Image (cartoon, rainbow, N blue to C red; front, top):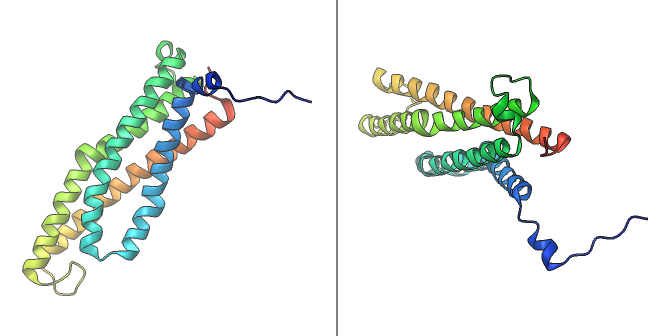
Length: 188
């Protein structure tokens, strides 16, 4: 029969280490990403009027992207620190540790593109569309809206689609990384 492990102050203090911090950071990032992508936004969309939903998303997503960038960068830094093969074989994505670093880097780049480029463009287009709706007295999807409003709606849809795909790619990358860590652990 295996020996029972007993808790002690030193044992609890020993929990604060790079592996523990890595797993907490990964859990935070992946859980947040799943919630924002598949649950929180859907609930808000179904519950709130469009203007409030838009305002909520406009405030929520920049924070989400910044947290994703920070946590993703920390994970990539810790992964690289604990897997020296990443630096010595960085040009060979067939090395498993390097592939995982590329996976984390992809998530960072996708969320960085969302935060710095696509997100601001989407917000600007959304507010232009809302202003024009107010001027015309019609919602973007009503018959008889101006060609300018139709064009803004098309641009918004395209930007929103690109943003969603980048975000989904980041979530899939995180899922792949989590499955890898679950199967192979954090050690090289």
